[in-house]
Image 1 (cartoon, helix red, strand yellow):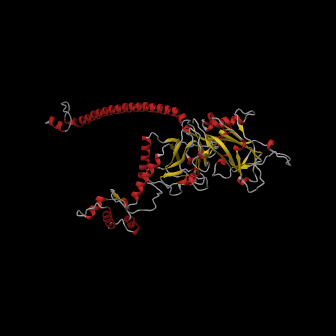
Image 2: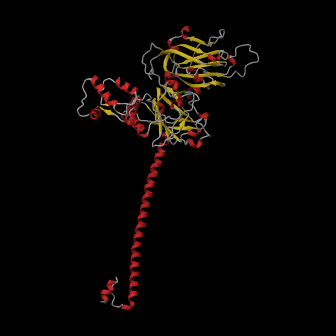
Image 3: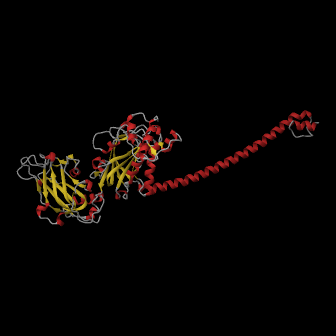
Amino acid sequence: MKESSSKQEGGVYNPLCNMNDKGSCRKRKLNEDDNINNDINEEDNNLKRKKQRKDIKNIRQIMNIFNGIFNWIVSKGMNRIPCREIENINDVDFFNFNNVLSKHYGSRIIFVTDDSISKSENILGDDNKVGWITRRRRDVGHEWLIIKLKHPSIIYGIELNFDNIAEDVCPHLSIEVSENNSIDDIIKEEEFILNERDKVGNFTTFTKNEIEDNVGDNTKVEKNKDMENIKNLDILKDTENIKNEQTIKRVDNIKNIHGTQNIVNYDKNSKRKSYNFLDSYKIDKSISDLLEQQNTPWVELLQADCVDFLKTVGKKKTYYFKINNEDLIKKPWTHIRVNLYPDGGINKINFFGEFISIFKKHTIISKQKIFLNKPENGCTLIYYHCDHIYKGHPKYIIDSYKTDGFCTRRLINRPPIILRTLTNNSICNTSIFKFGVRGIVENFSIDIGNYKYDHPECIQIYLLDCIDILTLNLLEQKKIFEEDEKLLKKKIQWIQLPPFKITTTNQKKTFFHFNLLEYNLTHMERTATHFKISILPDGGISQINVIGTVLSTSL
């Protein structure tokens, strides 16, 4: 009985223990169990600590590997940053070039996810209109737009302006470029599908089979086009989606209703101000797939993490970025994509570069006369040196949209009484332009416009024919001419044309023609890739046009 009772109490039978020592035996047994449990727990804790130390060691090793890889990528990619910010405006070396993004040259917005507050087209203008400002985005994604350039263009620098939109500045933005004219077709196709879908109430479409089912199994659509048109019209009139005579009239005028889909509730205003994420993603995916298939993917010019624009709000309104990758300034681009992260706005965007002339690949002398000086044909200001410009810019004299050209200040060393010409005492006000192609010059047309009382006394024009310089990029050409103009004895051999004097006997006359054919100059003497113009002693010019024909070139 003792043995059984002892076992029933849960203890191990010990013959040395009597009934009086029953409590002490139980206590000893509990202490032994506690010691065993403590030993087990301590072993478990030791195993856990060993495992944790091992895991920490493995994590540290993995982190060291990733840090090494990251540092290697950063060190390898330091020279591959597409562009860098220029803090000092005096260090900007691309202001001479044309703003290829200007809407005056034909650039336009072909897609934008949202411009509910301010139109996206405003970023392309030179006026005082507030730029592109989007809604406050509440769904996933970010705002973006695509710009189509009128002509393929090479980009050397970017200017971003955030004036007048301090409360709507986007935190970050990135800029991408591509060369593929098929982007336009993809966007038109996808927008057409979305707009047609939106014409239907509640995004509902009616197929031919659905119309037949609504009428009944006994109703059949006749093969005759006219009968089918009438029957479908009667069915559509019974639906809740047709509620006005204008829509009924549109359905009455439908011809050839034999497609698989008939859309109702037509909306005249098909231009959308905003796209949700799914719609914009569908268009984005279609464009990306096309570019990947044709091996013309988006190339990043400006990285999203280059600047945090919110940190400099109120302190800085304009940012300048120079393309740092030489491979990027060798390629012409047709489309530009601007991404705002996640929303906000930007006032103006300027892209400085050159247009690629459509005549660049000509291999024979063209009989068609063109304006060799037009930016659209590739003409660009390379270098200029003026005493002081108080109005305009020398690059405006070749731009038909900038009618004011430029004007210098009055000669500071002019005598109290003018006794003879001042051309010999003048400071050299020189501008050098490059043509988009090699051409044969026939005529110069000079317009003094608003400067008929501030015109120069004499205009000196020089021509240069040098394909080797023309094949270089604009920055390299600028460096060559800048160094040569500093020399007293020039290394570059310009052909000096007869000086052209402007007479003002007729105050109403502002156009002057300088015809080279009247000077018996040969074709070789009139062949040029560059031209230089100097105004003596000072004054202003509104426009200058260079008319000629395209010569064969190896470009």
